[in-house]
Image (cartoon, rainbow, N blue to C red):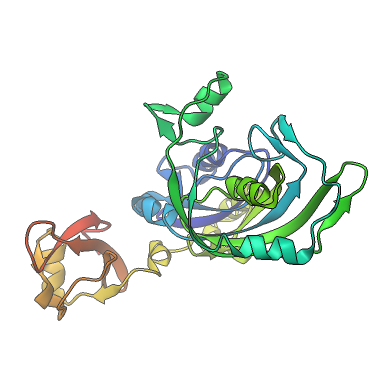
Length: 307
């Protein structure tokens, strides 16, 4: 079994929990996920199966779309609603729609984030959440993220008793973006401690809500021998990559991993991204610019050497 399964991850499960269960359901060990989702977050989690595991890194690098809720008034250890409160400041006067929208718009483009302590980023060989659970804090490396759009989707709700203000949002962002941190940083710019009080991933790796299936549905489809109805081809992960269809003669060279000149494909210069080579409509290899030989392409990832 080879392909990509757009899974709808429910809340309360880790991404690894999903992989563990799917190995049993699909009766194969070669299963991996294309982008971690926190236990408190539900949404689209691309699952790579068989040869599909060879494209995991490209799914992880792809853009994502989330919808969620931001709450002003207090922040937490985990930057979401599951953590302990670490800072509070009453919202005595609710912010206007214009104030919120203008500040959200200021985050669109390239931004710098400091990963939350409760994250899987490694520092000195240990993951940040390991330090956090031990009650330690360490200096965290700054990271760049791309925010394509960040918009409020509901009218802000002011809680006069709790002295908080919340609204829902949708964000389209690039790889490595911490939406929890986005909520915290937005709150700071607005003058309040904040946290992400809800989050759902609507799209990831080119797959969206409408394509996603639950673990229960996968199990049922396997029993009915109809899993092919939802299993997406590996090629679906390559939509954003330049594509070249190979002739029989060039395929013989590519299948053996040969270094090839750009002129073989009528190219004067290589695209910035890797090139996806297809043969008989199947993804067979990814080639990139050779680091030492000017004007040559070399294999970056072999997907299939038999078609």
